[in-house]
Length: 319
Ligand code: SF4
Image (cartoon, rainbow, N blue to C red; front, side, top):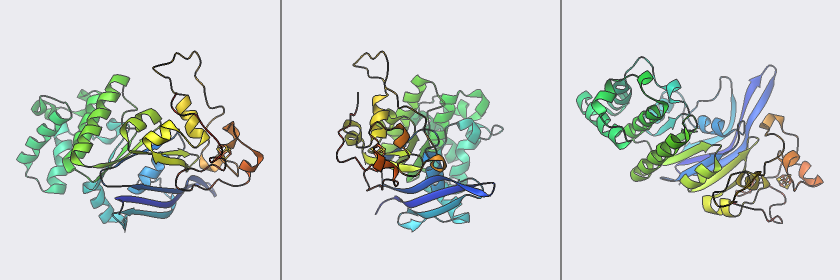
């Protein structure tokens, strides 16, 4: 049984008298200890999909489909809060927006241990110091007395990771956890998150626009476009031989360390949200392989790819 199973998820938000669809027919599973990357550009619906798992959808949002955790529908109300406190944790892009600025780092780190796990306060402080050391922050006792504004973005994201480890959830939802950081700090923070997650056997859904980062970190990848999954496969297979033209375009538009390219290929046009997409394949206006038949109906996702020409196309993978 999968740890998390998302079945035919659809999500729409009210816009005046109409509904704007943001996510359509998303199927996704995550096994215990597995890392899955949900990759897509802004507006593809990846963050909304992850947030739907723990009920963090916009006010008035309309949801359909099923979200199961260990085979049981994710609850609402108090039971959902309990699930979020112990079993599923989220790491957000901007830690500053999710840490109370007037509480110390120590309060932030020990509160969940004391309240949710019943750890005595003194033991929680000792554990917090150990956790800070694990995420590469020395002098923990002093750090616990500091306030969020005294820490850099990179340090604060490490504190956020330490707070997740404190509870040892079964599943981490990491929503662009390194996007707000500078490049060097990005790779350090991602390496820490990945190492500690593996050591503890925690599963992760990594939401990112960075296909390369997701491929380096995750066992499987699901690529989203206009609110739908268009390709989902083991990371090494997807990057070596993509089946969907959008995945191929994303791979080819990355710079290569081996080859000097004076101009990188780009995917023409701009990404669209689900509610903006024309009938038929949402990627058709940008696709070099589009045929008139591509515009007739949304290509069904067969569990691997959603492209009516996937079987006949030979696409390029990693540059
Ligand atoms: Fe391109 Fe057609 Fe495949 Fe869509 S269905 S990705 S337009 S080839």
